[in-house]
Image 1 (cartoon, rainbow, N blue to C red):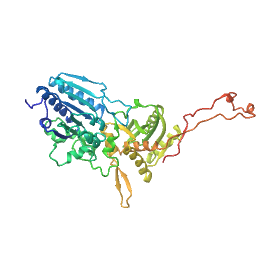
Image 2: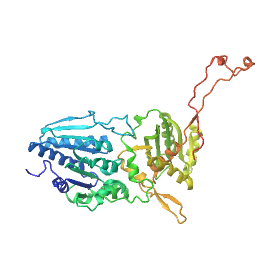
Image 3: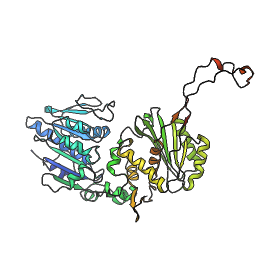
Image 4: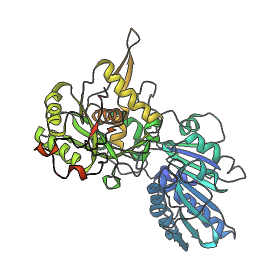
Length: 468
């Protein structure tokens, strides 16, 4: 049987496809077709099983439900047509398996997409976590493994499952050094067949990309180094490592339509010209802060900044707004207190110990996974990773960030301010009518109906002592 693929491939894709090693791992630059090529590998394996009168089983574990669906729609389904394999596809059907899709959100149902191909081979795609990894005995494809939450726990659950002769395929772009993908790619053992394709090698092998244009467009040296040149980021000085950041990413975050009416906390990093003006909206759901919206604008007048903030206060049950009061922030903070009340607006001077305290509170939320942020936003991820700690001669810690075309870690500080604002819960008060006085008839301010009024429940008035 020919090893030539049923669809045209670039040279680096052919090398990956024709490598029939049992354990195969590849580190590829962004948008170079790693998922497309690996799903072709999977369909070809099913085709070979069918041609020899057998059947096989594959499971694709992706970092989220959207990515699992893309692997099935733009990969498996497309290649099955190219091989002229008949298939039945259970799209949008919740398949029943003996695991909880996400232990942190047991009430959320994830959809497992499944294809049954000619000859009885089956392919299932679903979000990855240790329970889903443990739930199957099959060949496995770990898609974007460096970005999987709990990558080491997934690995411990998975490897015994595939030990009985099953194949394993792993692809990803780098995501720092704190995950299992880094360990597998940099190990010196001969067991794994390792492939590495940066943007330069991909273009040399035929991928039509304009490298100078891409680099100018991303406008972030660190993001370029990681996403396209496959350099392992130095995480030693990063305040938020990539592993911490991606572990808190969720497909449901960043969508205002998912707001449930709970208390909201907003962090606001203020800028007028060069950097970004950012409002980060967090809703408290249980003990987790869910990002509902991130508004980022550049070079907008103060009146427009005020209008955006007023609109956020109108749409959300905003308990507290924490604003960067340093520099040009004095007047916006003063104006916001006048419009929304001094008990709902905190002006924070991000200097000295206060700056470190705010960042520490925010970092703790990431470490404890008490925050959810939008998934797959490269610019956001780079901004959150931009802040680094520098140890001074006296042992003190300073937080620094490069100032580039994407700003000065403006999203980072808006996020940290929002998390800090949520640390002290609002106090709610109940009010009860006073007992009628002997001279109530002569009190012109007292309603004649007051004596008939029941005790009032708590209203929306809240008091919070200053958090900073």
